[in-house]
Length: 468
Image (cartoon, rainbow, N blue to C red; front, side, top):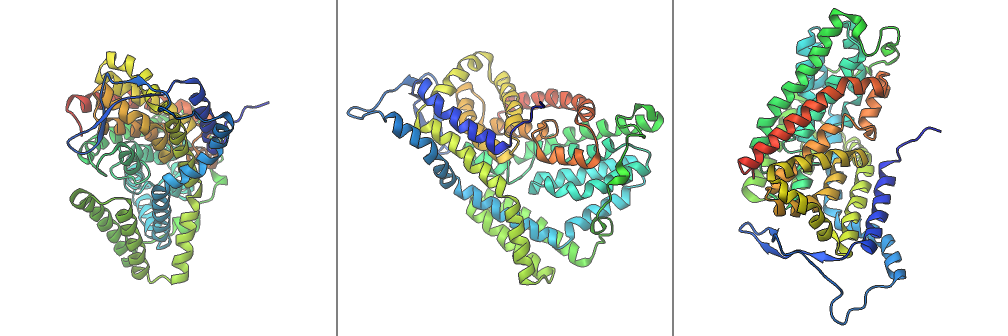
């Protein structure tokens, strides 16, 4: 009987139960917290103490605690409501953008322009996918372009692994060093009590070496198999790329003046988002309103019917229903641990050895923990809501800036997305390309080893420069 990894929602529900059981096993404890100059509550090292019920307070009975494990799920959705509705708005607005055809036209132009030159195709394709993920959190939206890349790779005497590498390595760099990805950076910084999009400069700097690492990894493999086809991970007699037909709308998409205007409107919106957050401290409500305004502008620019726009918006929001459910369940885990007053107990047990190791090693340890967590919680937003409530005070204790803890989360979530078999996007792309998972591992593991080394170095530098 073959073992199958459960659905992410099953894993998160199980984690809610595990968290509930921990409240019976672990003693309640708490650190003292004081406000910093920026108004953030900071954990005071050395102040951990075990706590009991307040004087005159009766501890809840077993039946009450059993009931609480069911009640905490709706509470989790309520507590994460502002994030969930922001996600729906982003999904709806992006679906309207896709409906204009501007995204399809842009990517199709990239593939047509550089499709006959392997080195340029790899660079331009990876750059386009990385940019989309870094700014708009795109991932599933790349699936229609996989057949196009597979066809181009076959025409250049390359195997499907190259086509998959262009998409997956590109979008992993976009997620791992994301500039303003609303599903990862914004949510993680929100949980950590940081200004939205703060620390942007360092993430932009890091994009260059990580992109170069991914580009040369894919290019090196492409050149090697062009010289010797026997080195292909998917041999020619196994290559079934001809069974996968590109969608006509993708391959024939042409740029128009309307497409250019829609893309310009999107770029202006992203610029306004960064400006508003930096100058006026915009939060999720303002950001959601901005993307609603973008959707309306796109409807006007594309002369789209209101019914068509409404349908596209609803479809885009509906596609993120699973993400919204994962966010609600993930938030419930924190509530269970918080109700049982064991979050600080967990933090204390982890912090004691890390405090001895020093801030730089502690930051690398966070990277490792986030990488392992992504196997069980491949949802970026879900992982942020599960891990950042623990990593944030842990960072305070071990002398690591909270911004560094967020960066460690980004690395662990973003890059391992192209490694873990629980990631639906990765497995969907591999299925479309007919690339067995074990062959993909042989291709991607050397890149991931380099990522873990470079990421650890980047985190050490972030600690040394006091990255905020």
